[in-house]
Amino acid sequence: MKIHFLGTGTSQGIPVIGSDHPVCLSQDPRDKRLRVSIWVEVEGQSLVVDCGPDFRQQMLSSGCTRIDGLLFTHEHADHTAGLDDIRPFNFQYGPMPVYAESRVIANLRQRYGYIFATENRYPGAPAVHVHPIEADAPFSIGGVTIQPIRVWHGDLPVLGFRIGDFAYLTDVKTIETAELDKLKGLKVLVVNALREAPHDTHFNLQEALDFVNLVQPEQAYLTHISHHMGFHAEREKTLPSSVFLAYDNLVLTLE
Image 1 (cartoon, rainbow, N blue to C red):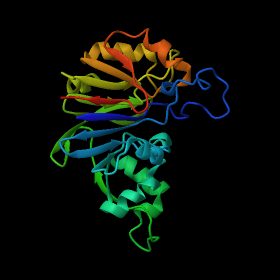
Image 2 (cartoon, helix red, strand yellow):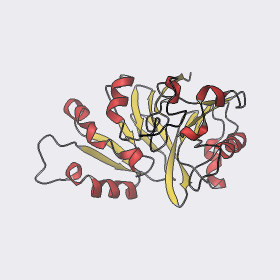
Image 3 (spheres, one colour):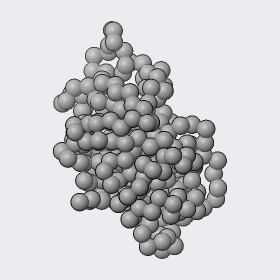
């Protein structure tokens, strides 16, 4: 399994438009973060989680040329606003297989009516093949089993995903105890950590570290990072030995 970090930033990305914050001015490429997304290559399948406004740039930078499943964690724009850019994949492979909760699909239908239209479709409009999923029901893509994980982004229900010994959770503020059983025995956990200061709907750094300590993966990578987290090089020195800051274009290989 290969995990490509396509983006590791929060909703504004880093640098933030118009900001003179020192991290936004950093020349370290690890401090430049696109909106959060991952690409997983596993058992011959190519899976992408979330499709934010940087999707086109991420596909070109990573070299991803095929997507067998596009999985959505939730409906917020920083996770969905690149949906129009699936068109090149449509031209090669037909409708994009999209996996999301029914609530998220309904939201996308409202925002992207031309994509989901069944009559009088605009020629060349993006096309999707919708697969509704549920938090308590594992599903399969090309023989790869995916276990959804229910987490809460404030009051908004969000899905994380476990594939084998890898789990990806973003936009987490709370998680119910029953869901923790789905995270046992992980080799790698990816989880959001926005900044040091508390936030209403995201783990801050200490909450993320406490969660990692609770789950006990072999390694953990922090994502959905704000410029307020500080410089990558400095912050990573403060983390436990098995916890790392993810960064754009990082690739992990799990045997």
